[in-house]
Structure formats: structure tokens, C-alpha cells
Image (cartoon, rainbow, N blue to C red):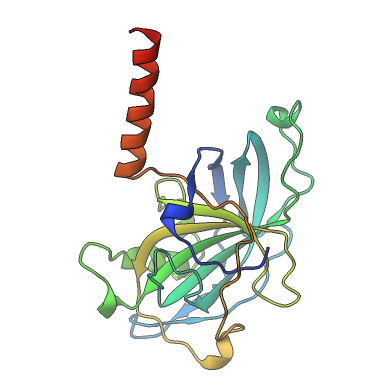
Length: 239
């Protein structure tokens, strides 16, 4: 159950069993990432938020809604290749489950997700390496400019293609209690880092060992197979 893993679309399964229901991020006066005076490069500064200072998201999985409080942001060198493409950097938005959260929707459902953490992974490349049409400098800039309030402005989660799997923390002791939501899109930003800012280097991809890898979108092949399947049912029923 270790992370990171090699993500391949042909190995993933389409499902609508996971989704973001609601988000309420708060403005944070102490930024995690500081913009240099020339406004062209970014450096990381990490610290933990406490007592719900960063706000929260409600995440639904298999009909059960859980609330995860935003606690910190972490910047890494690219860890999760998608179909062989590895981004230059990954920004991990780390959330911790609120054990006191209750909702009537969960009243008659068994809690099937014991994982304590949710990591939303945003994949970044340097601006010079980005392909045309993929640039969204405003996203990172809003996330880190004066207050951490940009998450509410951009549809970072709801309207993006993404993969979901169960894994582990990146940092030792690598506890296997993390849900991963890896956004497929490549965002653009000029980022400068020092080697001591990275907790992980030369990471070896972990074996999935039969773990399911899910996606929230269907490609052309998926749609064609679904249409063929439905057509066969209609023919057999005599319609």
C-alpha cells in the first residue's frame, strides 16, 4: 500500500463513487509559499495548521461523506507519472479527517473508509516547458498570494480529470492510511527550490499489488464499449 505509484489509464477503472461535495477553505495569513519580489518565482515554506484554521472539504466515497480539514501544503519533485509523463513538481494539499463530523446522509451507511488523510496532488511544470493551452499561472499565484484563499475560486477538484487510489504517507514512517486524489492536468508555474526543501529524493515507484486505481472520467474507448454494451442489451430485450 505504499506511495507513489505508476499511474496508467489502461489499468484504471471508471467510477463515480468518489467526489468532492463541498469545500470551505479559509484565508490563511501565513502563506505556505512565498512569492519572490520579482513575482516570477516561488519558494516553499511548510508549517502545520491547527484547529481547522485552513478550512475543510467534504469528500464522498461509496455514498459516505467525510470531512477532511486542510492542514498543510507540501512541494515535491514529480512523484506520480501518468501514462509515462512525469511532472517537474507536485503540490500536495494535505487534509486530515475530522472524526467529529456527522451528517444525516451517513446515518444508515457503514463507514468503509478507515484512512485518516486525503492528499490532493496538483502536478506542475516550469512555465517554459508547458504546452500551449495548459498554462494556468493564476491558479498557483492565487493559492499563495497574501492569503491561502485561491482554492475556493478555482475548480481545482470538481471539474478536473483525476485518479484515486489508497496509499501511504510520503514521509517516514510511511503510514498506509492515505487517500490520494491525483489531478490529471498539468499546471504551469516558475518554481525555484533548494535541495533541503525536499523530504524525498530518488523515489522508487511502489508496486500496486492488486490495489484498484480509479478514475472519474471516460475516454473515447470507454464510451464506445459502454455504447456497445447497452446496444447488446437493447437487442436482446427486443427493443
